[in-house]
Image (cartoon, rainbow, N blue to C red; front, side, top):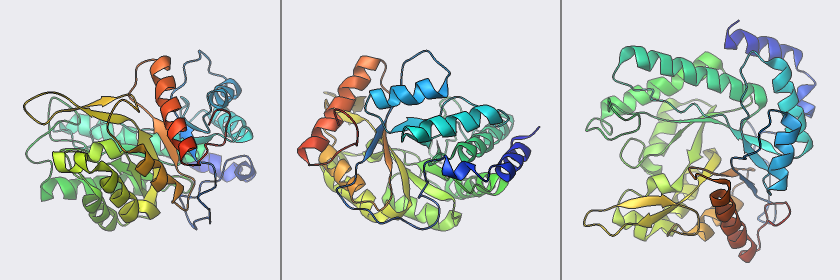
Length: 321
């Protein structure tokens, strides 16, 4: 049974499910909020369990009220129902179901398989009520799925990305989630101006913004002034932002421009600007830790972000936050 057929059948019998799911304000009218409302932080967890209740409980134990989508297929309706029920019962939203792959792979067969994967993941995101199914635009690089290539900021690349985004959204027709693209340092879109152009050209209600501010810092000027760049991202893209990634960047002592991802708090990213931007949004947008290796590294990053929030008078709505 195909994902799309499963999705239609599931949504057709799920009239009572809306009461179980945490509301997704990224589609339709925006809710009014204030800067005093709790923010949502999330990240990977490290318990060995497939039980939705145990997974949701572990998120709350760590001070998380947002989660990456638990492993599930579109055909596993009972598990999807359990995920919705148990996570909603603990006020943990599903931030994203990632579709991470190269939608512009130079190999036609790989590109076709990747597009099918993204459509499937968007269908799952819609079923579980995730805020978004994020991906990157991709790359014409044949060796590295998000690597640099001279054509990655050309009109050909942009038009192909617009077509891909429309194709994914139009195939799934999501009603409870969005499809989104991350900005990347050397592939379109590289900044908020690019992303605004992409939003207008894709022209789909279910197209959102997945914001990773570290990916925007692709030159010394932006990095030195990253707080102002973060402010600009929220100012220009705020109405479309559905989820965010949390990491940090540190300069490397090297003759060429070189920045490395590090644990939040060990780099130079202005987290006061980042949290200020999140607090100013009219929607309940999650901030998700990523790309660290161990539970201890995620603990350190989480504690740093919670500490900055505390100093700003902000809360993540959970113990220790």
